[in-house]
Image 1 (spheres, rainbow, N blue to C red):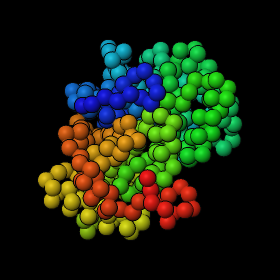
Image 2 (cartoon, helix red, strand yellow):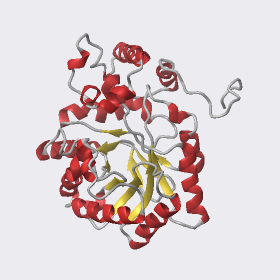
Image 3 (tube, rainbow, N blue to C red):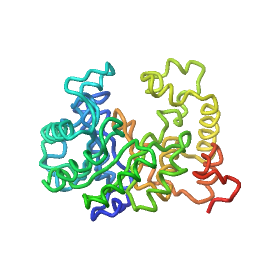
Length: 331
């Protein structure tokens, strides 16, 4: 396992980040402990969470797992959604968003569930159209000054929204944005147009999620009875909608064949492809059991050559350039 600097911060994180969304939702406490141990044994020191995962249970389980060695690990959490919205019913017991009132309560609740005095990286889970970035960032800046969080992160923003936030922190001399969290996989490459070049230019850490495209790149849906396969694509409408384009099935089939022809596990290869983009600090992986997680952990053992990466990239369609001068070659 290699370690990379988290943006411009002074800490280093593993080249894989373990997502804990399954803790309490697919993985009970024992299975979560086994997943956590397997990750630590492989060298992972960064664990990603959010307040709404499993209705707060993910934070509670993660907090119990890190309590004996808190200083050895880096943890993140997020705020925007009400915790009880995880069930999918849209319940809002006390609202949502990134206003000062909600952020303050959300952070205090997360600190209690995680049983820690501070969170290393605290993300805005998505852009809030109903609150100014100035209010949100001033609040997060206060959290940094209070020692409740160490670094500010942004998740699921558009490039202009990321850059606007960066500009505001510089204008007001707030604690800087340390990292971002976009979606990135062979089927969803939109962030290559603006988000990843922006991140490299501004020296932001990038922790990309969904490297397996909701399981599509594993090949498990390439069967006649794909509607009966156990997985997010069939369990969550959001994933089915996200990857419904017919071309994704053909790309996945070509990718799985490529992996097998080269004697590689498609899971390992898909994650390694995402992680070897020069802008990516670490892709976020996850699983419902330690056994299921192993191919993801083993992705770091693949030597990804420039030739192999180019061959895999050619299996899907790269996004348009950020400017309207698409006839010009990319540098």
